[in-house]
Amino acid sequence: MKENIDRKNVIWNMIGATANAFTSLIFTIIVTRINGLEQAGIFTYAFATACLFFIIASYAGRTFQVTDVAEKYSDTDYIYHRIITCIMMMGGIILFTTIKGYNIEKVSIMVLLCLYRAIEAFCEVLYAILQKKEYLYKVGISMTIRAILSIFILLIIDSITHNLILSCISIVLCSVCVLLFYDFKNVKQVKVVKTKFQIQKIKSLFLSGFFTFLITFLGTYVINAPRYAIDDMLENELQTIFGIIIMPATFMGLMGQYIIQPVLTKITKYMKENNIKELKKLIYKIIGIILCIGLFVLFIAYLLEAPILGFIYGVDLKPYIVDMLIIIFGSIMYSLGIIISYVLIAFRKTFIQAIVYIVVSVLTTIVSYLLVKRFSIIGASITYMLTMLSIALCFFAYLIIYLKKLAIEWNKK
Image (cartoon, rainbow, N blue to C red; front, side):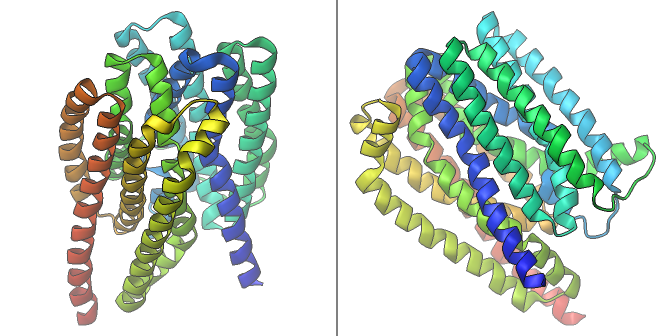
């Protein structure tokens, strides 16, 4: 029975994570085909910005909540906290668009896409409750339903109206419906640890999850740093091109999600048991799998990526083959960095990650503007690759050192 549940969790987690990850890709295809490169450039930039602000709403994230071994906080503590962070997210995007001085159309699209992601962030806190109860498959089903309905709604509304604002409103309403009629229903069926609202608990959550939030926020920022340089210095059409060629990198990030999410509870188990041998074996196995997958993806991308994506989006991508391969290599490093980061978060080793991300973020900001200004799209691709490589190498080096230290400590017990 337990094996069936585990298999069900793994399969639906893969389906849900895939559907969720490829939503933005399919959104971009729809908008590019219907609204053209100019409007697609606005949309892809707005969605990327919404992904960055999503980190404010999700704060420390589902991984932090699921790996709360000591159960220091109740389920409702996390829910109260998430409501506050979602409000902060929406206030942040309004402030950001005001400072940037965008026109009303761009502001509306950015705010609506942030609202769409804010609802998803709230769902994440419910997903963590289900995942801890071994109902990860219900999470996967929810993500799948939301993704499929959002895609079809966007396609229908945008095809009829050719209006991105109305299209964005439609996917927001779709997401609200899934939350109300599916996610709440699932959570009501499990035992939720309830406590009264306590401001001290909320403050404590902000403090204890700060470094996890910081590394996730900066991690998302460095991925999108080239986009911000493009937004300031190049045309919207080139923003669309970069958005298209970086999309396959989503696949490698997705591989990391496939592999790490189902084994988080195993990692937590080995931590409780002080089982360093099995823990190291599991971690190195995961890293090996992601590197093998990455090399295969790089080979396939060399052969097929440009013609396939060019056909799908209706854009000639042959001049950008080198850019694509550079990004794919960077995405392999990105996926590796994600996996190691999740492991370190489980150990609550977030300070060192924050230091790495702070340094890399500063350097990436400078490098992205220099390279994009001089080399255009290929400059953005090189920036992405160098950023991901730096983060992965730093995390891997620290992981090896920490596991050796941990082995010595646990063997003494």
